[in-house]
Image (cartoon, rainbow, N blue to C red; front, side, top):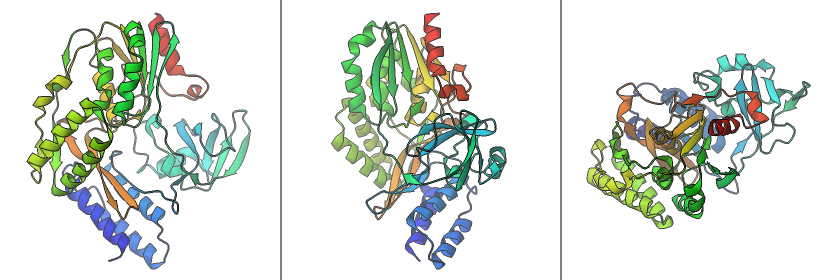
Length: 424
């Protein structure tokens, strides 16, 4: 058996035993088709690491879980590539929402066809990948990558053909920022919850401003997730002066305590305990580690987190008196959790679009091979899935929905709406 075949068999073993959704999604995948493709490409000597990663990721599509993905690690010899821009569909066009490396186009330009195939026709052709219920939620990145030519309509209405290139994927840089945008109004932008130390420092540094503010806007429209414990320091400003116990949230979490998940989780948490100083985070991790040690090999188990009572009871503050959270589909995982908890506060309004909705299956771990490939997959499941109340494909709904349109590319529609709500 070749190296690639062996790795793929490992992936199948994980999706059929260790993945938290393996029981719910039994029979959804077709591994034999992808194994055949791998063997054929190897016989033709055409299988590269990047192509193998694409094939495995395509296999995972059938699980319909955006919280599970396969990629190859970058090093000096192999780089992750993309088209150097981002798009979002509105009606029959893909609008350029961000330009990273591709300097031949501009934000606001629109792709009307790929390889001379109109966008709506492509939507039908790739409906397996674009399996969302609205254009706002569609991820066109893997689709655009399959084509070599784009017909681009500029903001001025001119059309031109662009031979698409592949660029080295830009390094992600998190953004944790606090700014006063008007007197008494604070804007916090947080693009992930991966660094509890930095987020706690941010809140501490601006504590006086937050305590004196009349209104707080929190922008998590782009939030790549992380750990729920990273945002606990923000919650006193989210809730009013009456205490709330988050442990009473009406759902349970079941962890798939297989031997493989145990070994991978232990490695993950050991690394994080060595690098993170936050006492809240460390207390949570130590308790999770204890529960994994108690339940190793038992399958699905609900952990005992009763000792976290001090962390789950939130005593809110008088100020700010009004909180607005900006959300969008690019907010997921711990970002989903944050928005969901914010909606429990009487002084919060969530505006924008629904979040990604990734947490039906969560608490990711990673399996790696030869320091080259990684499979990230969930190890826990929410009880609401069995009740038909899951968030997959729907996300956490905003209190006030604002449809995404190309106008968002020329001004911050959501932020302007938030400011008008505060002023009223």
